[in-house]
Image (cartoon, rainbow over all chains, first blue to last red; front, side, top):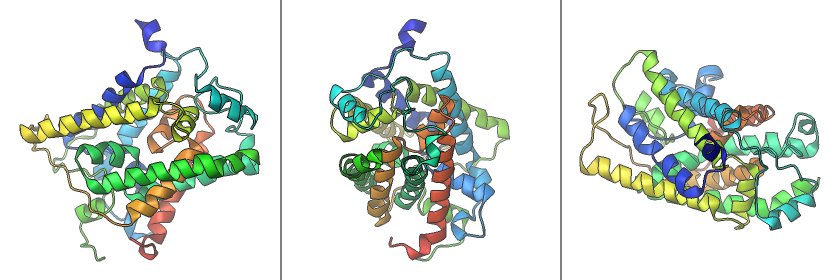
Length: 187
Length: 163
């Protein structure tokens, strides 16, 4: 059983389980699934700086911080007790492309060749981790949600603005991955 | 746009994750959210959703994996929300379940594109950032702090941005 769990889980197992988070949070306390809001609650609790956007009772949203703390804990368990000893298997075309940028280490889910403490202080690392992170935080809040809040929760509730947001997430991702990221990875 | 100065108003204006509950509980009631989050994080790791490589595959149309995950998650979510509404299912505290509708604004387009850029660079949405740190990729703490900074920057510039 444990050996079975240690294998990478196929999409038709993982997808429905992720979908079940929606009713789980609704049934446990009338909470709408969303993760990027946790970033806002962290701002509101630590660095509100009198900005109206961060003036609200974040303590009422503390469940969301417990939820993301759980995700971190899940990451630890997934990478230790249930860890898969084999490298991530991806499309050979991608392997070939990434090898051209010197990315050959597939032992971790995060590409160690380009995302590590040493590379953080290079131009490439700065773009990948700092600029990328800022875009994630700025964009999700500007859009009012991320993959969980819009693509999963919003679409589950048939909200058309969430469909607009999801389509834009994908368009942005396609443009970046295919047209811009190759230049960043070549730095 | 003018906002009424109430908490709910501020929370709904642009946050998807609205806490509809009016009930007050002791802090330890939040432990159940840690448990759901932990299960969720394990699924993230084991399905490789949080892998930068998987996200690159998705945006190059080289694998069905991520599309299968998001698609089946939405189907299960749709069915669950429909059942909850159809049968007026209540929470474990007996409170009626309500989900606030999402109002359209141009932020969903501009912000959506900007997040898409960031998603393809970092290979992570906000949720996976937490899980990646958990897997031992400590440098992702920097990406998470940058995302918090990005959120703060949005709050700071909000009134000057087109919505």
